[in-house]
Length: 370
Image (cartoon, rainbow, N blue to C red; front, side, top):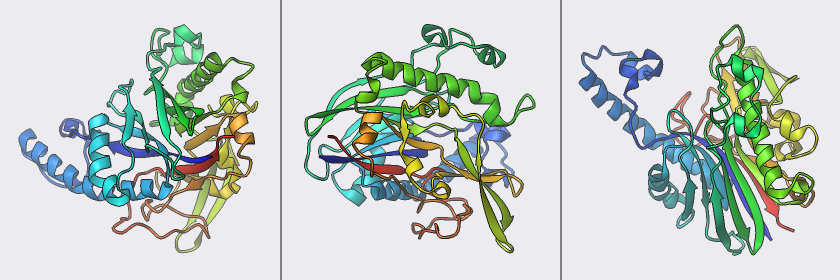
């Protein structure tokens, strides 16, 4: 029996307004920065109007991208709460795919902005096999000390042993699909952030993501047994905010772009992939066609990279040796630089930078439980 699973960072699926930009310019939207606003009351009114106007186009495109995954189960990142998820599913997804993701699960994690991971599931697969929810387990409470993961590198970042490991959560969900068990781990690791302490944001925050990756592995090995985890059927889905390789972009639209694959010496993904503990299904795609995000800080710093992963257990990977994931890029803004031959037809009303479906691309794969 087959089912289809996807992961998607929907980029701030919120049901509340953020007014902090009035006092903190770093949080202020560039549209409002164009205008002289006399009072905080005026700012709040304008921010509400801007957010609502922007959100409708964006969420139509987010829904189109999810519909294009054709997923029976989808793991989401950057979801405000279950209320936001329900409103989005009913107001947008339902209009496109009808009665779909009735089962929705999320918990309150550790993110300071309140964005969480979530999972939505259909009642049955497209083939008519029932999808049965068994249980949900949050691991947001785990600390460095509890798992013995505190290091001098973390101490240098002012991370205390008593602090929680996961910046959001590692949400563990057990299901049965057509009576066959599957365990899903929905994650969203520490973001890279801005340069600091003489290092780029990725290197500066690497110890936190490495601890999160070690914790994910610990949870799986504790659950299934260190010697038996590889023989079980589980999948890790989410935004790791890290990559093992990036496609560096040079040139411009006038003289032509150049693309070069560059391997990274260090990545938190290595802790899950290097010894075969898990398999990155996206690496079955051509090297230049694995990216899920376009990063730029201007013409001097541009690259494509994979931040969004579907990691399969060895048993699940062996049983689906020919399965290759799809990456849905039609919701990317026009500023995204596509390698030659990968261009797609964008959704209606996609803009140069916004509106867009998200800054991330959904990843989806069809799997058999055998």
